[in-house]
Image 1 (cartoon, helix red, strand yellow):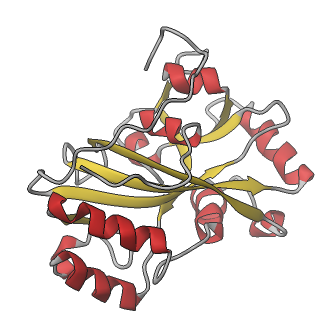
Image 2 (image 1 turned 120 degrees about the vertical axis):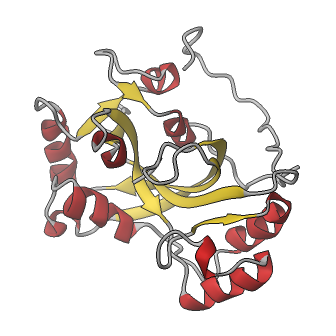
Length: 234
């Protein structure tokens, strides 16, 4: 699972801002798949963030989670970024700490798509079946995931155990197509009290809150601000 403007709800595409990373002595990197699932009205599915919920805070964030590298990929990154195993937070997850001056080297490795997961089916099943318990794995048969593009964010994380650390997020965003019956089930579940899934409009995402006042994490804007690639960091 992943980690507000009130002026205008009409979004005008802007040239992506270059993130200033290279002079940060230590930056936490979090690389994740985000999955866009839309209902029949074009609203985006978001989940209650489980890490924040453990603290009694309800925040909606995108469906998705950490991308895993292959064992060879982990070893290659250690050499490429001059880090050791202690820099990684968990097993094969692409969440680790590095010197900011290495950001463009990691960017190139990440964009190559080699020695890491390249599609998010595992994460969709993990989120919707194993963790949220919203679906059975059988209901995700025929799942189609098509890459939409990339997004980035530089912000302090609220993730348990890593709170306050400056985090560079590299996000690969996919559009997921579900069977109509499966999508209908998710929509019905979203209407239940205290549901773990909600469908929200683009305006609500940019506003940072749903119409009923539930917070939406700023990272959810990554579902809207898609880029064809990730610009070089400064």
